Length: 303
Image (cartoon, rainbow, N blue to C red; front, side, top):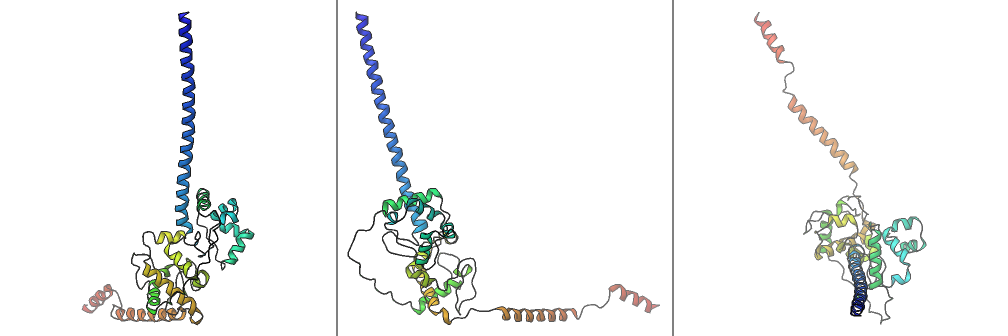
């Protein structure tokens, strides 16, 4: 009887131990899942915010009004999640496919297409998740804000500084390349610019002052990001460039692009003539025959 009672006692202990162990393992499993879920959700939200600042904030705001592109407040209610993700990844392909919404946006925003920034599917998903968290709901109705005061017209000094910065006669404070190396603008005072990037004569009309300023403050284009990495414009330089582009836009109908064709041709012809004269001058004193011929003539005379 004693042995049976002890056996029953140890059996209960083992059973309770197994039951407790299973409960602990189950709790740990649930806790691990919760921690993993939190860890996965936290960085994704943070990454989405960082990606939005890097890729989107130059052209879009969330509740701050239109810039180059639309205000994204409430966009997740207006657009399907799959559509948004693909639009962030490959807007050029969707425009080529004549997606109705994409074409309507292009027409609404002055035919300025959204660039393909090479965003991966994971990054696009993170950006959409951030929009769902930050700008997912429609803005609450508020009293209409008063119209912003008219910005003062740019001064002549600002326009001149912007012109000099644009064409590189004045260097940027942080050492960034001049704008003219990639862009052209139609202006009598500016020499012909590069063709690597878009022509900027009417960029102020197409994007407006806030849009131009936003792009200069945080370039969304990969080439500009690489060119001005750690070499951002100062506030004074940004203001001067905006002033010059506004002036160039306003005055472009009265400007003539510089034509260097005939000037370069005439300069080339003159250079060739000058070079030929120098060669003739230096060559007039050269020997007309070989040294051996002179030695031979002297020997013949001596005989």
